[in-house]
Amino acid sequence: MTAVEQDIWTWITEFIEVNNKFYDYKFPPCPFAKAARLKGLVDVKAYSNGNPYSYVKSQVEDLIAQKKFNVRVMAFPYWMRWLYPLHWALQHLNKKIIRDDFYIQYGKILTTVNTPYFVVIVNKLSDVLSAHEALKKTSYYTPWSQDHYEEVVVRRAKAYNKYKGNTNEMD
Image (cartoon, rainbow, N blue to C red):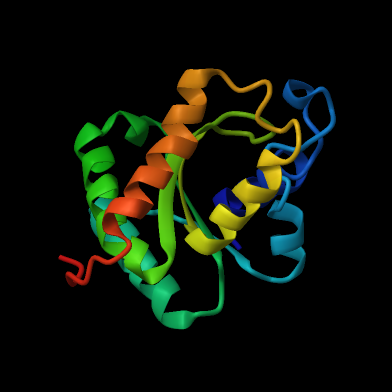
């Protein structure tokens, strides 16, 4: 395991899985992460070089083909968060993988790790949608701003509804 991958595992276990002040210590940022990790459904990969989009695309293709993991977290140097063509490419890739029951989200991480990273997270979409339905019955979304809710939940729902029947090959 690389140092970057270890950093990401630390971030998962010490931040993502832990009840957070933002949620008044009632919820972790991802209430389902710990169960997925303990079931062996989470995989972490560290980007090292080459075209970042090609890297993500190959990792997504591998994830779908393997049928072993439901989540893959890919860590990139923090400066890559400013590569807006990469953001566009990731959104374009989402259009293609929704039909395979996966969804990409991305962002920066700064908490509990030695170095900040830009992360790309690919989740099994049916797991995320099911978790969302369960969380709607709780106060999980109460502290979220309307903008954040729309950016995360509404955008994902719109993409799912628009592309779930897409049968184009990845290009």
